[in-house]
Image 1 (cartoon, rainbow, N blue to C red):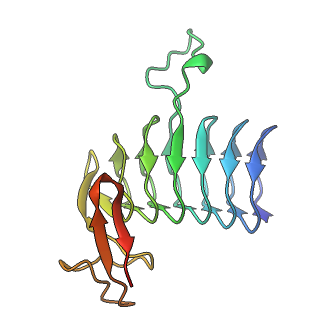
Image 2 (image 1 turned 120 degrees about the vertical axis):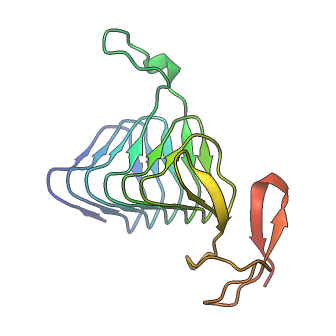
Length: 167
């Protein structure tokens, strides 16, 4: 594991093997980070956030954990959890509003504000985030037949869960 300078890991956090934590990162208390995650510079991963294995967080990703914060009102009992599933990518300066989940291998474009759950392999862009297509596990946009032009993987749509690899 690599943790760069000016970063802080608070008590009761769990960080998996082979993670890279950039500079000026704060890992809050009771946060769970899976193995192989890359958390770039200037990110606060607050209590209530879970990152599964191999999640990529681009520079300055923002996580929230309370829907309606106020400085003079303590709302730590109102924390809403956020789950970022295996292999997802969160682009630079994206904001993930608490209480939602990001599907496996989903791709959140830079600068996007996520205000709802994101399906597996969904490609999200715009503000607020809207689905603009599907993305392969290798990170390339799928064609209309749900095939990857880069690696050749083919996917099948399965209800609200998103895509699942068929070959």
